[in-house]
Amino acid sequence: ALLLVTIARPRTSFGFIDRFLVTAETYQVPAVLVVNKIDDLDESEQELLFDLVDTYRTAGYNVLMTAAVTGNGVAQVRQLLGGKTSLVAGHSGVGKSTLINAIDPELDLWTLEISEASGKGQHTTTYAEMFELNTDVPGTFIIDTPGIKGFGLVDLEAEHIGDQFPEMFKLKSGCRFSNCLHKEEPGCAVRKAVEEGEVAESRYRSYIDMLNGIDEESPYRLDQ
Figure (cartoon, rainbow, N blue to C red):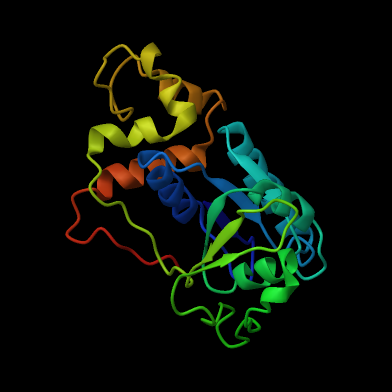
């Protein structure tokens, strides 16, 4: 699964990214982050880009950076997809169809500009569709999906959420209690790692948000 994200226009929140990645981990689907539109960032947004890339690479994820409109980084994505069937997901407007067109121009998928009124994407893909890509490696398929407004957790117990954060799972054995939820328990190796900067605070906040929201009536949520 490729999760296509953008720093701005539209903004992709850490919470959305983490819920997607947790779900991918739960179902053992290899996930890669692709940060698109890196050519359209001001100085402060570039700092946010570096922070995001560092956060997820430190957590153990493969993170690629692209500018689909100019072709920057597209070759890396094309190479990554070779011989696989891959799903492309993300908010409307992050450039999913544009990236697929850059990988294989013969597909010529329909795209739209970001809405000036809302600063958000406009839906061009209305249903998931799989395409075979014209690449050097046969058997390369990609699934283009509609933009996602929000992403919730389904059928995931609270005690299993932390195991889906690779950097936290590695520390679990260091906790004093085997059933530690990494909240207020004494001797928690995960909270110690957060305090010492070894685990990103944004990732830990996402984890706590998931714990707090696991009992909500609806598993779905919006990310504005």
